[in-house]
Image (cartoon, rainbow, N blue to C red; front, side, top):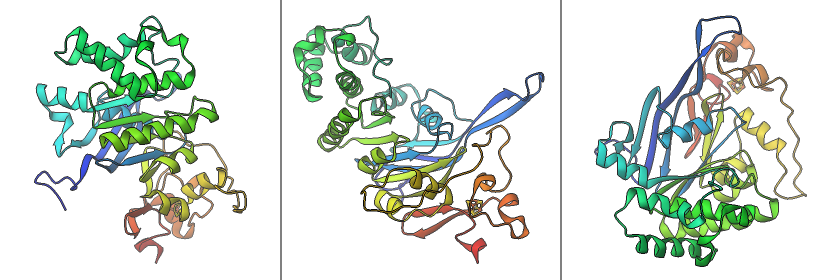
Amino acid sequence: MSTSNGSTNGAILEVRDLKKYFRVNSGVFSRSKASLKAVDGISFVIEEGKTYGLVGESGCGKTTTAKMILLLEDPTEGTILFDGEDALTMKKDELRNYKSSVQAVFQDPWASLNPRMRVGSIIGEPLEVNSTMTKGEIKTRVGELLTEVGLQAYQSTLFPHEFSGGQRQRIGVARALALRPRLIVLDEPVSALDVSIRAQIMNLLEDLQDEHNLSYLLIAHHLATVRYMCDTVGVMYLGRLVEEAETEELFDNPQHPYTKALMSAALPSHPDIEREEIILTGEVPSPVDPPTGCHFHPRCPQRIDEENLCATTSPVRTETAPGHKVVCHLYGDSSQ
Ligand code: SF4
């Protein structure tokens, strides 16, 4: 069902045909420019109160996608609908509301917190800049936020170096919560943390989601994190979404050869589960000069060589089960 603006009912954020091309030098000694297609026409929907995960190898475009949603990068083309309104054409007040409503937690809690600022100032800064709260009100709110993320109000006077890695990430979460956002972009939120602490931060994020009906966009390469946290997962390869499904469906029934390879390389969820590891040959090709046809064809163990199909023709998206979309010639019309 669609709203008057055409967005999906229940969607907090909808990305349509989003692209980001960078102009780069085409060679070491060349002055001519080429186009690096970091994100090449992706579309997905984040439902209110749900978690959408983007996975793929480093350089596949997932962080650039997150930056465009956070308005830290200008898209080359495409639409970012927030509550059905295009964030890229919003005027001043709407834009301020969007920026407050969409916050981020980054990977490295050591680098993302200013070491010279006390924690109270780090968490309170968005409130000082974006609200009319008094100093006393901000202090009270910072105390509440610290408590909410499992720390204590008195710790607002300490500096970041006085905290452990997990505690610092809690501070990053408290800062992201300060403006009462509705969507938080989680860019590899636990991958810099010790394995023993990851579950604690994931549980905290889940509890906060339940309590505040938060929506998350989770950027991650660690599949166990994705499986634990996400409702729906999109798999990216060379700037494009190649498969999307609800989490359990994707993990139980991966269909795209790239998704199968990614999952075969990850540890199975149970030691009794046998899984044959699919070794991909070759490097990820350059997004400056991506392969013709299906971008994955030079590495694909299931490539269709008949009439050079995969090397010459881009596959289209096919729905193989409700909500399970695959972009591959093995499925849909071209497989028949
Ligand atoms: Fe492999 Fe062809 Fe499918 Fe691409 S379209 S993933 S090359 S089978």
